[in-house]
Each structure stands twice: as structure tokens, then as C-alpha cells.
Image 1: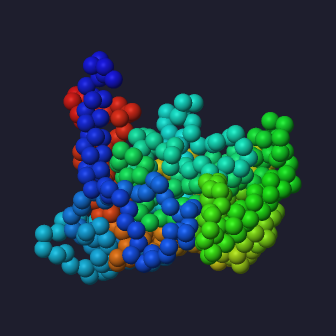
Image 2 (image 1 turned 135 degrees about the vertical axis):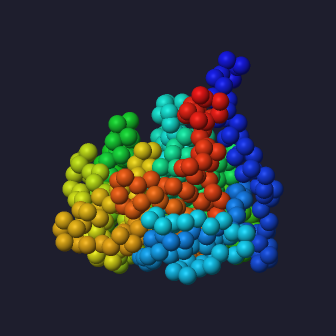
Length: 477
């Protein structure tokens, strides 16, 4: 930019660059080979060689004790006037009587609430950033109905203002970025920590598995039927799916034979690499689907080809097959009351989440929206209220599972985050009131124990280079 750029924008850029440089200071140079990997070169699986490994390095934090607050631990537990201690990026202790070590920062949480950071399993931030213009529309590779070769992370723009808004307004500390739903096979998803970094690799959640975005229903048949090609019907959707999975099964068979016997390796196909990862159980299927009958068809297809559907997204009719979802161990990521906007979403109910919870199925809230991600706590409150209206009373602390531990499970990272348990990442939100109230906002947000947002400290409210500063930021008077 030229020298005519406003001084207040230059001030914001300076703050953002400071955070970016802090983030990259400890980025890894190279991912070491696992010590346990002694297999010969011929036996190395090609699909799980990530040429774009995470270089995530946590911001430095200080030992911190939050005391006297109401705590939702993320796994259904509630502690009144409790304390949370974290240090070195990890939760150290949670309980009613936790002492601060020497030199720790102590924060009085009297009258406040503490929860794990919010996890959004369905986001397109970075791939469809703000401002929403065509030049930045990078979420759908709508050139073929099956594009498992594309990876969402290669479209992620780390400077999307949506990331900082989700952190500051919604307490979102982890999110999965998915390709769009134009295609039956949309490509790989990526899980990010909501931190400031120069690159997508600098945001990638360390050790998190990839996902595969799939879609059923109206979107693929409309997009490709409108181009005069398959699929143009729901039966066409399933037919193209099955043809693609049959090809993946054969690809996997050839590679397994090579890995066992050696010889000349089969031809590399990066699209099939992703599908082989699913068949091997290393990549998790995240499936856009609305209708109960279609979800049942997809589950039958998964049985045929030997893969698992980790979660159905949107799933407005999930309440109709809650027992089937429970039996297959398939989660449902849903909205509170976003339905009826097209035919396949017509038969939704506000009590969807509550009905799934009552049936013992794995359920959670999600956004699919750059604005909705900033108020997922309020969306949970709406879903909870809808359940109460039909006689299903989900306690507040249990409802918080829909925001933390359940999405962590569906992303394969529940051993690392999603609840306030000793040893887990210190992804923590201090709320200025009951977090299920429309009047409540985050007061402070920590990611890996580092304070990245503080409502009382302008220096802890960084924004993107593409947002103007507010009064009190930089040299704005």
C-alpha cells in the first residue's frame, strides 16, 4: 500500500504483525520421523505424508489462577465458586480449593463464569472470508462432483477478520474449516487453533486428523444437474458416490499389496490418497446432509465400502433417526433454529439437539456462518429453551457439552482439548456473566494458556489488517 493509507490502519497492521511474528518465532523447521517408524521405504503409506505439516507454536503464557467463578467443565460438570489453574499451556487443576503457585497471575472470578473454549466443527472462515467478495470465494471447487484431492487449508487466508471476531465475541478457540457443499466429495478439511499467524500451517491444530467433506441432497444435484451432467438426482448422487468409493477400494488394495510385497509402486492419485485415508480410519468423514432418509442411505453406503461417517452436519432431521445415529456412533452437528429455507431443510424442529441428547446420541451446535460463529453460546441457549418447551430439561452444564467436548470428539481431538481437565490444552474463556445469556460476552480468552483477548486491554484486542481501528486503538483520537 502507498503512503496515503490512513495512520490508524497502519497502527492496526503493526499490532497484527507483532502477533504474527510472535507466532512464527517458534515454528518448527521440519517434522521429525516417528522413532517407532522402522518400516522400509516400500512400506511407507503415501497418503499420510503431509507436505504441509503444522508449524503451530503456542503463544507464551504465564501461570494463571481463575478463582471464585462458576465453572462448566465441558463434560457436564458444574462447580460453584471454583478455581481453574493453568500453566505451561496446560490445565493443571480444577476444583473448589486450588492454590496459586508463587508468581502466578490470580484473577478474581466472583460473579463470572469459566468454560472451555468453544469449538466450531463447521466453519468456512478463511475460505469464505470477510469481505465476502468473489475474489475471496475459495471454498467450493465446483468443477467436478468429486474433488477429494483439494484441501481446505490451501484456501485459508489467515488475515480473515472473522477469526478475531470469533475469538473476541464468541470465545471460539478451535474450529474446523471445511470446503463448501457443492460437491459430493468436497475435499479435506483442516482443524485450526484460533491464533494469529502468518500462514495456515501456523494455525493448524498439532496432531489433529484431517476430515473429508462430503455432501448429499440438493446442492450437488443442483450444481451439476444444472450443468447437464451427473448427478442431477438423489439417485445420481449415490451412484457417483459409490463409483468413487469403488475406485478408492481398488486403489487401496493395490497400495496394500505393494506395501506388503514391494515391487513397482502403483501410480499416485492424490484424490484417492484422501479416500484411502478414510478407508484406513485416519481421515474422518464430515457429511453435509439434511434429510433422515438420506442420512440412512449414506450410513448403508458406509457399511458397503467399510468406512465410518463421523458426523452429519446440518442434519435438521437427525431427531427422526436418533437411535440409528447412536447405534452407529455417528454424531450430528446442527443449528438451533435455522431450517425451512429450502425444501430439504423444511422438516426441522427447534428441539432437535435436546431430542438427540435425550436419545443418547452424540450431538453439538455448529455455525456454518461468519456471524453465527460469534454467538454459538446463544444458539445453545435457544436449543436448550426449545427442549424445555417440549419437556426435555437439559442442565446448563450438560448443554455446554454441545460447544466443547462433543465437537472435540467428532474432530478426534478430545484427548487434547474440549474440557477443563488436567493435562489438556488451556483453552479457556472467562465470561462476564452467565454464558447462556444473550447479554454475556467473553471477558478474557486464553488459547494454550496465552491471553489472546482481554475486553479491558486494547492491546489484547488485535484485529485484521483489513479492519479499521476503533477509538482508543493506535493513534485514533
